[in-house]
Image (cartoon, rainbow over all chains, first blue to last red; front, side, top):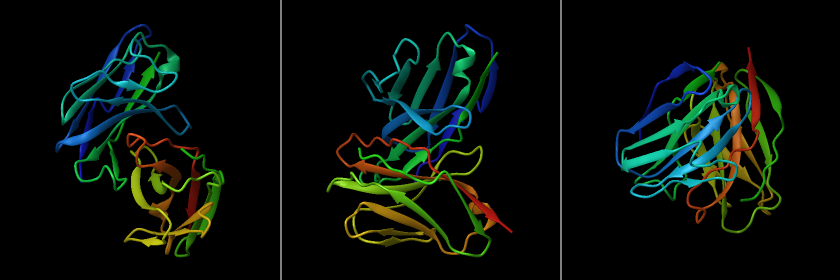
Length: 117
Length: 111
């Protein structure tokens, strides 16, 4: 299994500012992902955080708005840049364990709830 | 990945079995069916997955029809703590391990 910790758990931000969310996994993992969950909605995949290379973004998400880092096998960050009220969401970090890429068990953090005023 | 269709919401009496259906009529031969749930304000939690055989673990059972076009997640004795949104996801192992979540079913377990 993998335990995923995210910081901050929640924040209130001003329009136009940027916020970086940190994701720490308690063991080395192969794949890490970032999701967004807008109020009352399902999860939307933002990007795959690749260790040692640029993240792979899903359609509708761009690096300038959501820069991602993954310096090693246990840590990743997501920055939400130039925030607007439409960015108010829960941002979730997730990962496959080293033994689980083919078993389907994707672990999630508890999420970072951002409110943009 | 194949698209899934789930009812928006369902009710279940506490102690009774909860049967959550999922349609995935365009599923292909190498795609698995996964179930996750999200309890309010928490990250999603893995429940079970299968390819074509029925599967059972400590949390639930997964019944997949012979043609694989639909499946049912069964919680044998639902409790109030099982109130959550349940997501049925179809995913091919080659798809860089990505999971795309649909809208899910809100299960309300009532006393």
